[in-house]
Length: 421
Image 1 (spheres, rainbow, N blue to C red):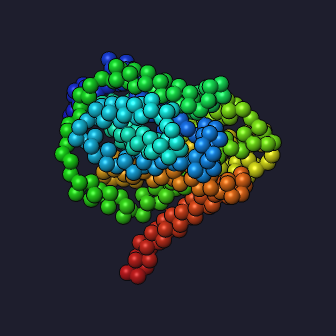
Image 2 (image 1 turned 135 degrees about the horizontal axis):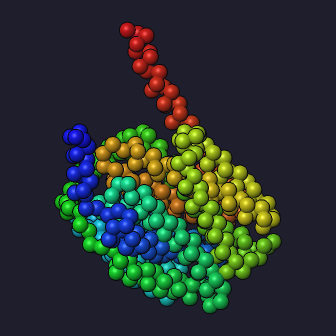
Image 3 (image 1 turned 60 degrees about the vertical axis):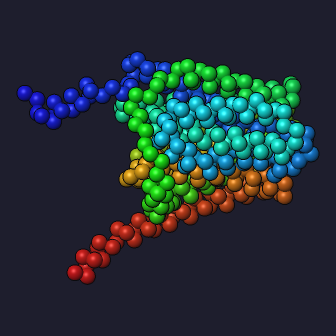
């Protein structure tokens, strides 16, 4: 007869009604979350490839126009945590639907913004609305999908994020080249509307969600616990610094490529974002890197790759700039994958809040990077933007070295105590 533990495990498995590959609803759930990720991140970064055209219409500097990106990512960063708490009360499906619906509604108004200030305000509202998507999607999948199938389901959602961010920039670039930047934003808004309709039609009703109560004290306590953990704080800082580099580079690169000696048209500049596909490969390889080099070794490799890309992009050669973007993108995605996965592994309790704090730091880094990179570009050209990136890279190295030193000190303490006794 099989041991009791085996029988218990079999009984539990048979009683587990969560979704798995081949089961009814699993494919619908995966496709629904893919569509949500596609829409959400196409909207979030929809103005990034259009910044030179926006600057030209409103007579704005790069740093002023960059706020159409930074306002959205900054508002998302500030709203992730409170919206994650609301999803605990009202449900993940309801929160994702509301967030995407508001964001798409705003996207249909954005092309008619009469001034840069109104465009920035609309983008801030859009970013705040989109905060409900990452705050709820991971929790929905964790509740509705069996653990063995969870990684694949989350992978498809993340792929939607990446492809959405990339395709949104490409679509806006080519449409803007033919009909102007406002038409480009309208195209992304209409495409996202179709994605949201598909999301709502495909996503099954939650069967394993149990509504909780809004408890601000408990939320504040979880946040304090995570922010008092030195390792988690270091991971938050690393995520923010990596995103500072990425935000600076991709906010400003359009301005560099539209100018001499490159003088590229808007559509070609939008297509530069195909480099994002490198990030998919780098993210997938991050696990193997950690297995071979350890977490800190993988971070050092990611930092070195990013720094090499920044330096290579200084050359006045399109081939060198593209190669530099490939290295920057690969280094960023690898570093982000290592840091974000380490947060879930490090947090012993309140993992949802720990991940929400990481996302807040991550998008604050994006907001800061876009603004600082544009200011530096206005003051010193592309070399100024690269300098911002290198300072952020140096910050990652410093934080990682400090972590290594702290680990060595902690390892010596038991030995010193034993020697004293």
